[in-house]
Image 1 (tube, helix red, strand yellow):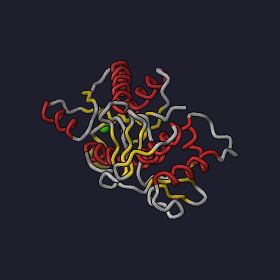
Image 2: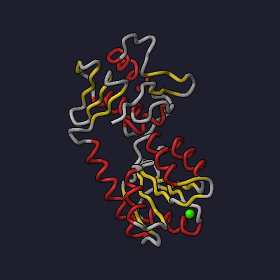
Image 3: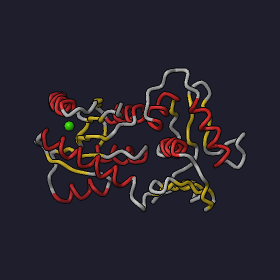
Image 4: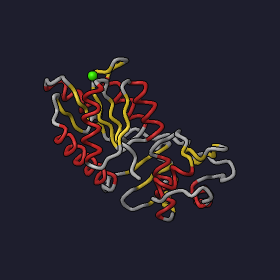
Amino acid sequence: MLPPVLIVEDDTKLARIVKAYLEGADYRTTLATTVSEALQKAEAELPLAVILDLGLPDGSGEELCQSLKELGDFPVIMLTAKSSEEERIAGFALGADDYMVKPASPRELVCRLRAVLKRYERNTSAPDSLLSCNGGALVLDSLRHQIAIESHVISVTPTEFKLLLTLASFPGRTFTRDELVSRALGYQFDGYDRSIDAHIKNLRQKIEKDPRNPKYLKTVYGVGYLFAGERDAL
Ligand code: CA
């Protein structure tokens, strides 16, 4: 099951229309009406993409866009009443992937969402798509499916790669085994599956200096795992 598209919009009538169109196009949706609710939902649900209204009651959508980009790699489409060129450019500078001026056609919004998601897929498999952590000490190369530790390429399985990429894309966020199975392995967790634990154990042997005292792949007891490295700024 794909993660939902997060609609951040305080105009509930408009939010309902956007939701109906997205669901009609087979996307799941989740709704937030404030900046704080949006951040909370983004962290909990790791949305596929965010449709972001700039005028929100408890803060600016611009700031929210920045916070979202710090939280993870979410595609963001800004939706706003502002229409000047400067404001659009400012939106892109904050990391928005696309920009629509209200009143926006919901059908066009769906098309733009598809286009943004497609670009994202392409970007994550582009040759320069490297995720670098801890000052380059750990680098994930999405094209070659390779991991480098202190510039030494190590060999990992495709599953191990996807697992580490999922965790490292959201540093500090705890993932349950359920979330890791569906995101990294692509099937539904049955509650008894301990394969994630085996993969994490193997990954630790490969990437940690001391696998019993891991620096990157931490166990969150009773919950799951988190990546404790720091992503380097591009
Ligand atoms: Ca608004």
